Length: 88
Image (cartoon, rainbow, N blue to C red; front, side, top):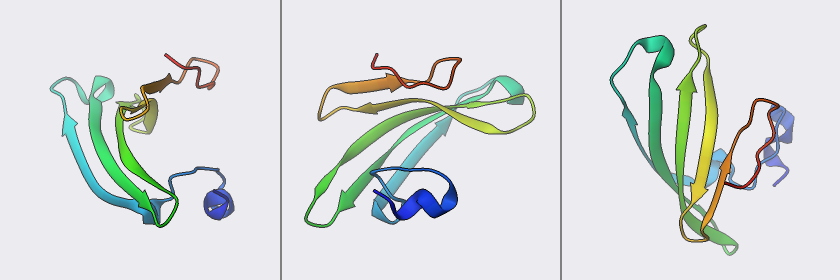
């Protein structure tokens, strides 16, 4: 979980664990576009699964992840305006 801390964040799903990525950009103006998709991950001898995600393209063209769902566990979290990730 601590491998990514050198990049300024903490995550149980490290980039090196991601084995497949699928995404879809929905029609709309770029500043209001939504990117959604899923990725599969596997941490050897620890855990594996699939995550659904949604990303909002902000007016300055930055991307902001707004939602994660782990369907195997029935867990969804949505980023609120304060940057907190409560369960949905």
